[in-house]
Length: 640
Image (cartoon, rainbow, N blue to C red; front, top):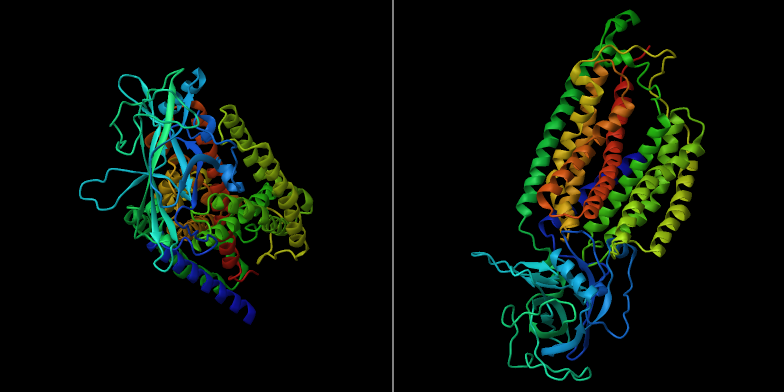
């Protein structure tokens, strides 16, 4: 007993620590991203700085492309930087470029190369300009940003991620941004000649360079010299047309900054929406307080009175005259229809819950910040794989409680059903992306690695967990189950399964939908998501809300002498996924500008995967809350 009490105390201490960390992270969202894992790099004057190029991205198509898909200047050998699994799944393709600087050495209008646009190259440029594609570059792990015009009265600068490929004017002609004005911010170390890069800005311009005889070894142009400052609109723009020569150029300036290295990501993560997040938290807490009051009323007044009355009855005849939840004590633990499928979904939900909880813990500690590119996706995939042991253990223990004997069959379903459905949808969407020649298509090697993780690690771990779970003694029911099922009386309209299930999903969704807006914005509008403190608090609120609404509706169901609560408990909380998908439809038509059919299919396909995962997660939370509640109340009454 002492060990159990100590374990409970440690669990409560851990929860208090995580909530405190979440509150701190919510209040200081961008302050401590470099605590783990990422070391600063010091540069001396004239050190080589290599600009890397990432994907071309557009919020209109959601289809990323490799930088060199367009006919930009290429280095002699294109080298891919080391990519983790998350980067590949996100469509990132980080490669070297022709833009190389010397630390703290300004360059004025340096010509990079000249390209003659073929018919296809011009067509590709025009399509990408039409779809508002942006070029993403990286210097010392900092993405390039374009300064926006500050609003009147606003002291806070704002930036856009990446610069536009080009633009189209009213004359229906297309113009390419072929000159880049870079600005590198650095922070000097007062005790040494070293400096650290703390900012990477660019202002793109379109300029039709003028030149005489062209020499590839020593390219010179009249429009590019130290006395001429190139700014947007200062020169004749460079039109995109077949058989046109385009000269690419850049200049770079270095500027000392007071920004310290540990805070250099603040400009990317700066948010003016913290008040909205706090409003979301307060809104969700009000829902939790309302539900907590309902549960407290049931547990402390109604239920306490019921148990006291039932325990005072002297004979069975009096008990038979009573109505309410005690009358179904002989049927409440009767195994449900499709009990094996329920075990599979509960096991999968525990696996997903474990993955989500551990991922958020790592995120709160700063390991999965945007500075660690692809880290979040990699962590989720690997944690899902290793949490397979929890899925097998949970499903087999529940299956044994239902007096099941074919544990290997249940284990196979646990290992393959949910991942199989997700993989089938993902494979179909990947085929569409591959058909569009997008860099977002997962390569064959990565797909093979995912198969290895699934079949080589996840499936064996599910079997190990299932074997351990089935070896455990079966969970004993607090009351005996009658051999003959009791007849269920006719239910009121508001207690019908469909209505009760749909009504139960509203409050869990209401507790998270404001935060959901920011998550969807980060996914589909190419924004950084970093507010893991808020997210963890909302996640805790979601758990409490799912548990409480399921308990409340389960109690009303048992009081009406309907003992089919197993699936109802799972579906009541899980139905919040329907509202999530409905919100995704609303978001698509109100916030996104997607026009291509393939892009629309991708959006709804990925949102279907997210909604399905949300259904499994919330359904499992509701099921276990109801499972604990039912066992608690029936263990508290005297059954003769």
